[in-house]
Image (cartoon, rainbow, N blue to C red):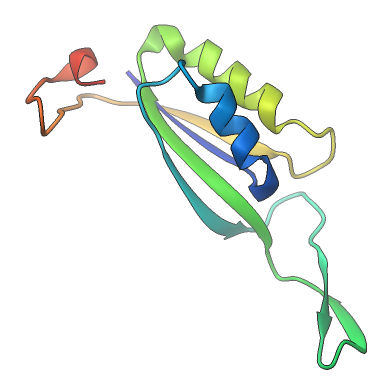
Length: 113
């Protein structure tokens, strides 16, 4: 089993969620702030007379656990949905999971997904 965590631009969250439909059993999505290779937005300050670069970009993070055989399909779906062609599109991190237990069903391993 693998844990897939994708950090994408916040305005791409709906596209990624739609792309994951039917590919994963479930996932967690939450908003965050990040600072990577993408250009940070310019924001107005004071009474609107000045501008400055924001310290962070608004991002969304999506986390899911999938079977090893589903990793490529899930990462490809996220990549296609989040792609804009500009710096700061995001990053996908895949890590190995030793075990999973579903609290409700008491199932373990792949059956818990």
